[in-house]
Length: 449
Image (spheres, one colour):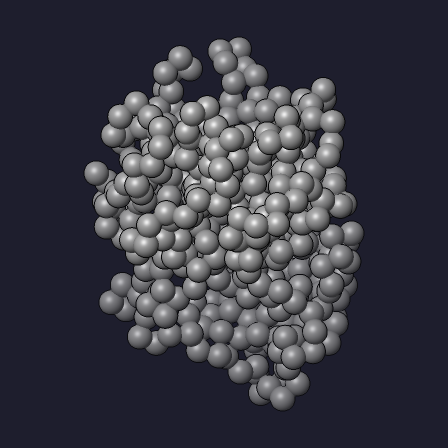
């Protein structure tokens, strides 16, 4: 058993006794610095996708933690595809005057936003991180906040600052202060070691949760608790669903139902779990209450019904079934009634995932052209392919629904690589997530608030 040691997940605990303090603008601008949240975003998302927002990030420091925080903020905003960070080498010297931007210098660079900040040693192992967001066009401070935290939490502070910038400039919550559960794949091709692991959304701070002695598969984040569900062979030859406590490292079997249990997904409130139970060559979707309320069968096992996923309001479930003779996607009410087929393409559909925004369902598709990751509306309309490859699978949405992460496998001389990549729901900005081993089966967790 592995005990997981994580930085505090409570934002209040993260910020320490001093907490997060709002910084007023410099005296000359203190009364002309309304928050963008009150006046609408600086740029609408659709516009930012076509023309990323140019933003200048003045280094918090040229070395040490300040430089590291600056780099993470820059990487976060650049990676999302909605911002274009301006090269610091083009900054005009002396473009800040007593803490106030020299607006003309930043306008000449085409900057719409400007980020400034500072990092100080607060003593007793604490850091004080201050940052300000400026609207160059309005010549006003948009946001000013100071955080006090432990030195080891500098990366989380950087993600929180990037999320704040994202929200003020785009008008909706960011997703940088989040974690992803995945399966680490290492060892020989003929007998790979598959370990349950978690990491920051950008691939940093990887922590391995299981030893690899028993194969782990299909992790899923509980949206409201420090808990993962995953599939393992740890108690026998058949795969079973287990719960992993992220605070204690304890592992718990979720019912010994049927021949095997696979494909776990939590309800939006985190109190129950959907999974598939195999019986007599078929598989039924069941719901089990995590407080011990027993099992409710939502479909029968006369066909193979697998990979269920709740809608964000918990009223519906999308799943994959071969009940019509071929693997397709279906939507039903949360009680199992009102089943309706939503996919009709010339191939097979699997692994549906409902966006936290409620507007899209992602899926894996394979047909004559190979494998693809696609999205469609919950009623099956608007179907479009985002990415294709030798094998692409296991899509999962970020907390605000704007980005997907999935697994891409590519043939190599000795077998195949397996990496995690992200892509916008518009099909642009595909990026590799750097992990220390090959990786598969991502599950994007909620914001760490």
